[in-house]
Length: 76
Image (cartoon, rainbow, N blue to C red; front, side, top):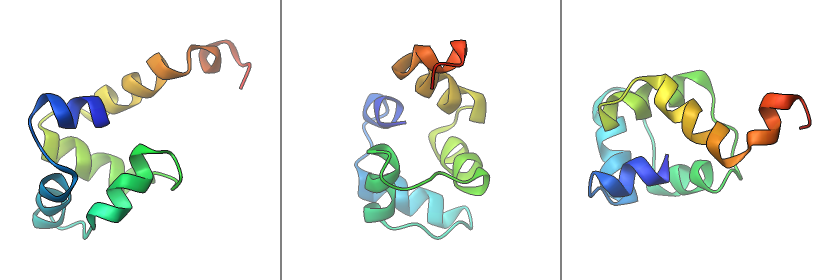
């Protein structure tokens, strides 16, 4: 998620504002916690963030799998 946000030149505040504008209220603090995996990302957050970034939701899931390849093998 962070990689896609940075690639698009969005700050956390700007992305959170875009998500909020799409109808899913989100503060930059909540977004920061999602990026740091301190806060659980529910499906509504995932879909709204993906829409705000202009990518399919699967792109955010693929990003997570790249960070944790062992999850694919059932190790996590």
